[in-house]
Length: 305
Image (cartoon, rainbow, N blue to C red; front, side, top):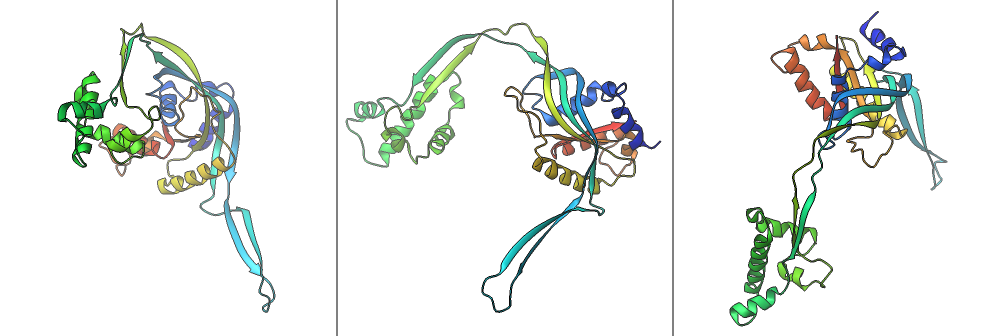
């Protein structure tokens, strides 16, 4: 039995299926599907298979556009036809569509808020200028005075004043779609007020690991040793486009930070990476480097022996 068939029957069999993906392999899949670091996900990982659809084939499609009518007629009848089911070397197939979940451990450590301080920094700036200079100067000096004082007030209110720079003010002006600090101060009070908010946290509580069931959708593509990387990438793009059109995706959960609607999983022989054509000094390095760039394409790489 070849590599593809051997792995396919392991997924298909209800007895071997729960242990088909190891915890480390599920961790690699979760890293492509979810914001694993942001959610504090860790092992051990386990898989839940609510449903599996085997042998999902995606054939090439073609669109034909045309017009017809009498040569003397000014108006033509237009038509557009989509032909599905064409078979060629670019036809793609998915060995299994997986709908279910990945169970992970979420590391949490909550810290209490001890104090909150808010200081408005854009109040009475012109009054301060009049006090210091005797009157408001003309432009562009007035803009310079206003900007200088706003920056000084923001620095004074911040716990880390060096983090507040001219670039901070530029960013605020850009977000509010105004050109100058003078334009900002001319806006109606309460529409956009500038302030510095400080939140102080206490010591975090004890770290706990709670099991989290993460809804998951994946397309498993198993290939033998002699697969073509470029061809499999092209097939993967076809699969991603077609499944997206069909609404194949992870069920929405507000607390789950997904990176993409679904994940494509490449299951390939580990011996593939004995080939020195892959970048890296040894098989482990080659797998690591391939895992990184494939993840950027929405692909989780799972080498198996």
